[in-house]
Amino acid sequence: MRQLTSACVLLLGTLVLGACGDTLPTGSGATGLRDALNFTTTSLPVAYAGERYEAPVTVSGGAGPYTVRLASGTLPPGVTLSGMRLTGAPTKTGAYTFTLEMADANLSSKVREYTLNVNELPPLAVKPQLPTGELRGETRIPLNITAPRTVRAARVTWELPEGVTVTRVQPADAAGVLFWKVTGRTLTVDLGFKSVPANGTRVALVGLRPEKVVKLDATRFAFEARDGAGKLLAEQKLPAPPAPAPRATPAPAAVPTPTGTGTTAPASSTTTPPAASPATTTPSPTAPAAPTPTPPTTPGSGGGQ
Image 1 (cartoon, rainbow, N blue to C red):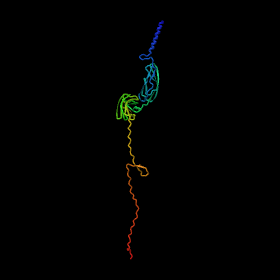
Image 2 (tube, rainbow, N blue to C red):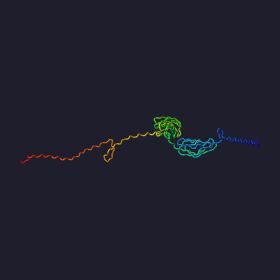
Image 3 (cartoon, one colour):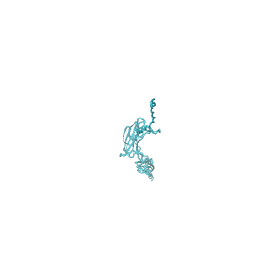
């Protein structure tokens, strides 16, 4: 009887140890210990009003499958939590704070607070990322796009400084169709996108080689951006060339004023001579009449005998 009891105890101990062993993970690389359940998404990217938004919520540790729910707070209007992703198009700007709770297959849970900032969408623009210093040797200048919205094509025009040669233009992060040409000092680049590029993406790299040290600027830079249907979404035109300086007109000659006050008046280009005044004859003083000479008296001519 004692031997039977000992055998039962031994068998029971074996079963217990076997059961405990079943709880350990099996397979290549299993450690038998699991990391604590935790969120690996520490912050959320900025969203823009009216723009499509999508951000994953990632986790680590615990045992899958995982579930994530909104525990408290408010999501931005237009944004929903679907599975483990925040998706939608926010309709109102602001800072929205909320708490997400995650649970795993072992019913372990973890909570984390997030703030999602919804900003006004900045203007759509394509512009060069200019170097901070002077251009001394061959350099690749990125062309970046901001707030692309639904853009699918863009044209860039850049009037470069004298002595700067374009060596190459190539697609960058946003792969797509690219054509370019140089006419005189003007570079024209046509871009086409297979999908809408992300905000802040480099869309092209422009290789420039200066003949001498030069400072680049974007004062003579223009672009236009269109959607898939050809609708113009945004544009920046080249500024008008400076107007030529007006010719200097010689000042009219000054003539004395008739008042005799010492001031002068500009002479007219067509001076009408003053009407001639009728001549006034001033009578000269009357000269005294010359005396009439008296004939001499001849002696003996008188009467008297």
